[in-house]
Length: 199
Image (cartoon, rainbow, N blue to C red; front, side):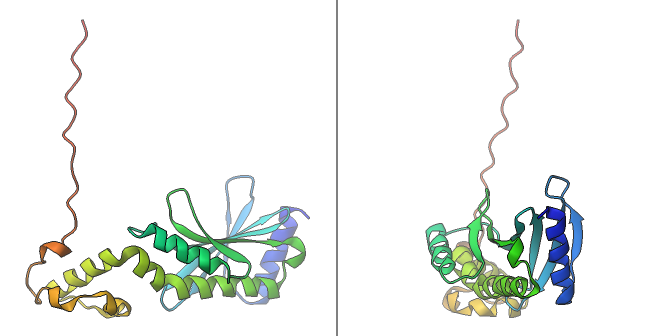
């Protein structure tokens, strides 16, 4: 089958399930992409990119940016999680951002199969999101919590991470941040001296 025929199957399957999507030119040999958003609870939305190819469809969904810390723990979790996923697997791109990717063959490109794969993406991206944040961003979460407390800002969207917080070390509301919660200051290199003129 051609990529165009598979694009037709893909959009037909989405229309059958009444899924909202947009079509966008890839600007390259892939032709068109189909883009949709899956609403979640922990991860508010997961954007999915479907690309029709001559063999079926490629599926990609962004899950989380490159972890700040504990890469070994994050990658171990992702690899173990891959064993239980249907139709997709976790991967990282060239800068370390985390994605779910998969392929659906032309003969399997039906509304039922697409529904299963999209359901798996939603279950994984939404269900694993807080775990990935805990594993890869614990220090940032603690700093954000302390910053919000010191400025009397609401904590409602951080409450899932309350167990990570040492409340004894937090500042009182309105007090400055203790040193341990301040972000590391970037080291700025001195500008290079201008080159000596030749001759």
